[in-house]
Length: 431
Ligand SMILES: NC(=O)c1ccc[n+]([C@@H]2O[C@H](COP(=O)([O-])OP(=O)(O)OC[C@H]3O[C@@H](n4cnc5c(N)ncnc54)[C@H](OP(=O)(O)O)[C@@H]3O)[C@@H](O)[C@H]2O)c1
Image 1 (cartoon, helix red, strand yellow):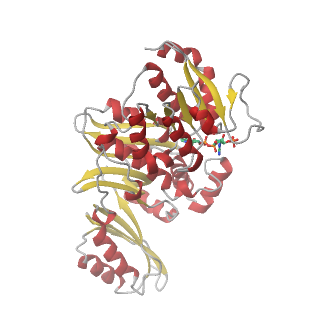
Image 2 (image 1 turned 120 degrees about the vertical axis):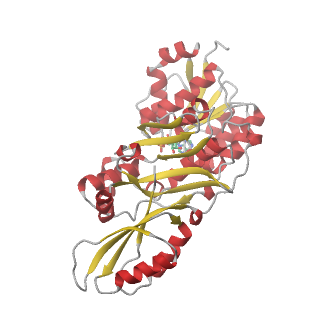
Image 3 (image 1 turned 90 degrees about the horizontal axis):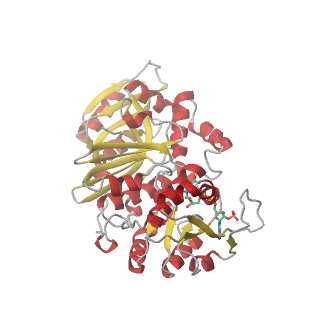
């Protein structure tokens, strides 16, 4: 193994780029001892050179053009921390691979869309494409699945993969407040972006899930095949009912091997209050993998922020410095299969349904008839208080049924004159 310093270039000096730069400075001795060689930052690039940054950049080369940096022959590894599924970030990675440099990236959006092609390009060029920081930030989930669980077939993998959503749902439960109110507070506290769409609409979770699915099932990354539903429609009322029924509401990303392909789902779930994932609160993330020999493995930790994300980025750099190279998605890229993502309508599970109905005779019978005709059996029904001719919530939980059957029953229920709002459905997960 080489004793020469591993020379890296960092493209992007924002939260993660600056965090990575600082971690390497502060932990330099420890890293050098563990790798048998130092990791040194030789070059950096960001959009604005004049920007005030709390970093000592006096001993690194500055590149206005990150593409020129990515091709520089004095570099061994390019660390892409710019972000975005396309544009400069993608060009930087392609340029680095083209120049024969290893790549480390935290960019889940890009890997979810271009992961397969980039893995193939990296393999053809004989370089590594590493992305521990792209999924669940500081939790070493990629290593855990790809290396620690490498001897297992994984029947199912799921997790809380977005700290912003988990913070909002936790805060709604703890305070009884509504979504919009808690989102505004999360933005003030810096836990949610000014434009929070990617987080709260489930897209960020879906990016991470698509990457995990490819890794776990040895298939091409299929972001378009992920069913995605975010948390905007979760109400304080539903959180209250979840509590009463013994559940917590969490936004989960879930992948499982099913007949005919792979199932990839992101949506709010009711999870049993006593399940380990139910107590993962606030900004924390967690991932659960179910292996055929190991059983259930849960990893929990911080999914974002400068320190945790830099910790994951530098773990990938340490692998490269040690000469440890593992295929991007655990298999040679040429062996990644195309697996069909099955539609959510095929998913079999139980449901929570909340209706706002006018409390008059016959309404419940009509709702029950719609469920019966779709062959859905009711597990429980809750209605608190009575208020003739006013809207009251009615909550139904069902036994297992297909998504398609539930959709058809809900369409019929929504058309009933006494049902005043679109029915609210949340899937119940047996974890
Ligand atoms: N933040 C987290 O906690 C976290 C966690 C996991 C993964 N990630 C991922 O890590 C990546 C970086 O995230 P971040 O939060 O660090 O982003 P950020 O704070 O917005 O930083 C982005 C950096 O990229 C630079 N940049 C933007 N456009 C550029 C261009 N055209 N050419 C060169 N540099 C350019 C910016 O330059 P200026 O500084 O000059 O503006 C900035 O330094 C993203 O892929 C993100 O999804 C982030």
